[in-house]
Length: 123
Image (tube, rainbow, N blue to C red):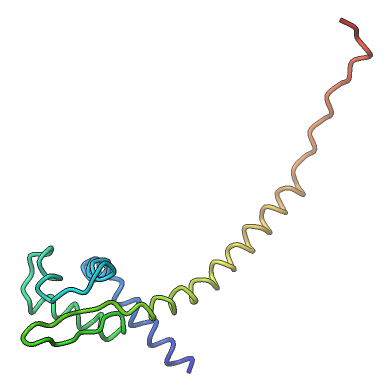
């Protein structure tokens, strides 16, 4: 189970490492797109776009459906929730470290001298 999760995370991070694939995912978060629609903003061939999409499919981030002659892609967000869970560990880790550092700095901070009080001056 741990090895399977590690492989899924590796595939997801590999897919997310490329800016073109991240842009494709962003586009798919709005609506389903054909391979041609995903390729258009990058002025790339359908073959090149298809290679990117295959990486996204391997990571489970995209599901492709053939409708006639058109390949339509849809975002699958589950792998992103796995990444979020993985990152939460480090969020807690660093949060605890920062809190400990803050407590240490507050404990070591010199206490400022008290301001002298004037004796009952009247106006």
